[in-house]
Image 1 (tube, rainbow, N blue to C red):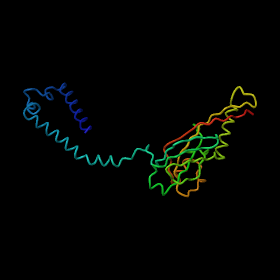
Image 2 (image 1 turned 90 degrees about the horizontal axis):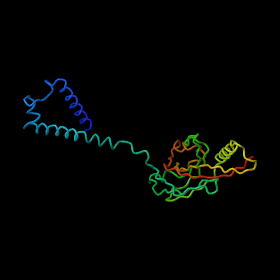
Image 3 (image 1 turned 90 degrees about the vertical axis):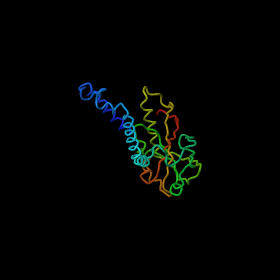
Image 4 (image 1 turned 120 degrees about the vertical axis):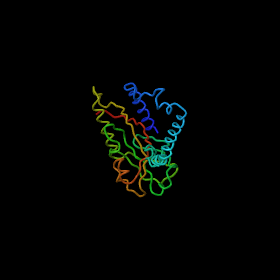
Length: 232
């Protein structure tokens, strides 16, 4: 409908311009032969025919437009897993803990998948999906509410310690030896689904979840941990 209106507006605009350039051809005068059709007893029927044609075209194409709408991809922001976080924290600054609401997990998923918690620390210089400095929990059977706690993996712990030392070593002027410098790190957490019985040792990065037939919950939880690092 919008395209037809646009075409009609374009035609009328061009007609109006030509009427100024060649008035003897394009201007409709009161004595002209077109005047009775444009403004007269017959003009109402011309308008009825025009409206009828537009309405017919609209009905004719309605089914095609409805089919196109139905086949359009759904909003990718909708989380098909239905997983959401109730609480999350790092109570001892060396583990990831979360309460996960799985009550909205689709029924057909409960027979195929189990739930795990994946966490890491935020580093803007590294793609989170490709970051190997992560921690993943054991697999848990889907339930309405699940509590998961997992200590940082060796890889993640060592990477955090290295980053903290590097930060302290860059401080200028250098603090006295033995001084305690508080270092802030921000953690991220994701609830994921993995096939039942899957070996979690095969997950080295977040992208490995989907690569192995799993699904990643859309919600991202996070918390801040503060660690005092001694100057060496």
